[in-house]
Image (cartoon, rainbow, N blue to C red; front, side):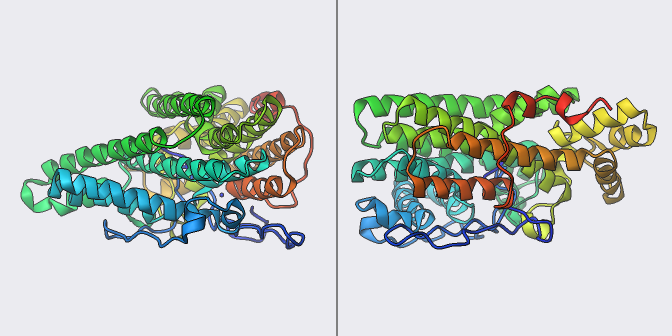
Length: 454
């Protein structure tokens, strides 16, 4: 699914650079994790670093205490590395079980899913889980171990989303390497005609995504938690999976029906990315800490705002990003006709102002898989000329500002909250210096605020 985690930008920086904490924490507090390099996973990981080509990438070694969450303070210093270690152990066991079921299946598919999951990504979702747990006072080793496992499960969900999304979008690249369905088709290109190999690659990728989803569910089901916590986690997990599918359906249905409304674009962005990329991971961390209603509400409200900003950043990166940074050619959303908010604002502005050239450019190139580079450049020109690009940038800044304000409405642990603030800004590509203005969410999400009808 298009998204994304994951992910600020200053005016003189490339879209891939991010702020880090500028000052060390007070003595006795954990050093901040480095901010991720890339913006946008988005959605769903368009900006993820290149993944390893080998499906059998080795697991990351782990220190025993950190890997199992026995010392949460040790995890604080390297959340990503610890989640990678836990995930690596889980993947090793799953691949071994798959090879025992059938060696060909284990090597061709299971090992490839494991390699994809290990080979890239910013691990923003799992870090949101961790720092939400810590912000809500989660300090017990059993809570930490559960959070690390749930974080690992989210990385598997991300694998499912990305692999399926690439099939639906007919994307050729992911993280600078051939997409999984392309890689599978190439492996069996000599087994029949080209069309058959292509269909096989798509079918194999669908199965690979299904396998990643099954593994993710297995991890959640096997995680030890108190009964009440387990119920909260299961409910959140179930809702998240349904929301992901609903958002992706709105996306593909919008492509085939040419749905272009602003409200529809925001709704799809919330469902397909904002919830599962930020809000639900934060809610899962709060649930694991047995947080009360006020803290949970503050985190979820912040996550909704920042998650939407995250998807809007991903949309900008798809249109204007550098393939050397994002790992995918720019313009994929334009060629597929994806009903993004960026495109909806541009179309509304062009139609309202009577700009026939801009309207014709959008109609002529949007949704055409064979659109030329020159046509894509013209669409980008429309995005700039109509003010749509600036509008989306401004909306991202306001959403993040409001998300940060929501964190102030509950009593949370200060250091963990600071880590969440850094992660939220980084995930949405917003500089540390963003003004923390108070803007009602109802205003942020309305088309009238964007002047789309001007």
